[in-house]
Image 1: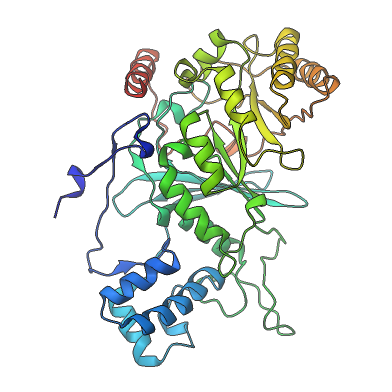
Image 2: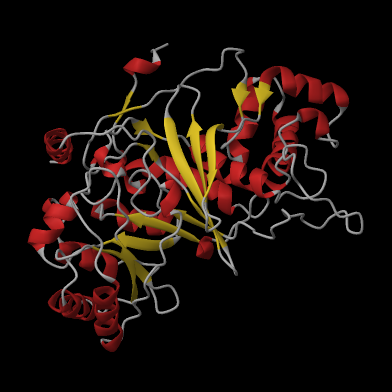
Length: 422
C-alpha cells in the first residue's frame, strides 16, 4: 500500500492538472470512519466487513438515518440495531467529527472554528446567524489552489483537498454546536429537549438554526469537484441532512471547464467571484483571469443550465479603494451583465483587511455611489454587512495559520501558483 506522502491526486476532468497531495491517514485502531459516506458506500463497507448483501442494504439504510438525520455518533444509541450488531459495528467502524482546535465567537454573533484533520492539517469554517437564517461557510481545501491578491486564504500554499467526510463533517459539527439534532441525539451535548413533542427537532437556546450553506470558505470548490459533489449529495439527501439545493451556494473564481458539470451533477446555486470589470485589474485581483478571461467567464455564466430569474447567479464584488470602485467600473459592470443577458445580482463586499494586505476598503460613500449606479442599471446590488471581522471570520480573511509573509514571499508564492495553473 502506498504511503500517504506518495499519493498524488490530479484535479478532476483533466483540466488544470494541479498536483494536490492527498493525505489519507488510516486510523491507528484500524476502524473505518463512516462520516461522509453515502448509502451505497456504507453498504459496500458493510459487505467488505462480512455482512451479506441483504443485511448490508438494511443496515446501511439504518446507519444513514442515524448518522445524518439524528446526528448520532454512538452505535450503542442506535436502538433499532440488535445489541450484538451494535457491538459488531463499534469494533469495525466509527462516526467521527473534525477536531476543534479553537472556537471563537464574534461581537456580532458570528462563530468561527479552527479544525484539524487526522493528518494534522488545519482549516476553518464559519457560521453567520441572521434574524431569518443561519448560514454555514464551508471550506473545500486546506489552503487554496488560487492566489487572489485581496484574499488572505490566497496567500497560503495549497496543502490538499478536503475529503467528503471532512466537508460533511463541518456541517455535522455545526449542527452539534447549534443543538440542532432531533431529541435523543447522543452526539450533541447541548441539545435542548422538549418533553411535549418527542419527534420535534430541538434547537439551541439562542434560536439560531443552520438553514443555508455556502461553499465560500478556504479553497476553490471546483478544483476539488468530485469531493465537493459527493459531500453535497449527502447533505442534500432527503433521508439525512435534507438541505434543499436551493439553500446551497457554490462559489467559484471562474474555473470554466467545471461550471457546466457542477450544474449537471450538483445543481446548487452559483456565485462567481468577479471583483473587477477590466482585464488589467482582474488579472491582478483574480489571476485565474489570465487563463479564463472575463468575457469567457460571463459566457459560461450565461450558459449555466440552472440560471434563471428565480435562481439568479450571484456575482461577488469586493470593494477596494481606488482599484475597482469608480463610477466607470460600476457602469461597465452593468454593461457586461446586460450584454450577456444574465439573471444576476451583485453582492458588494467591503474589503476586509488582514495583516500584510496592500489594499484598503472603499469608503462608505463610494460604495453607496457604486451600488446606486448598478441598481439604476436594473441589477440588484446590495452591500454585504461585514460579519466577524474582529475574529478574522469575514469574507477573504480565513487562514488557518496567520504567519506573516514578506511581500517578496507573497509574490513568489503567487508566481508559483500561477505557473502551476498555466
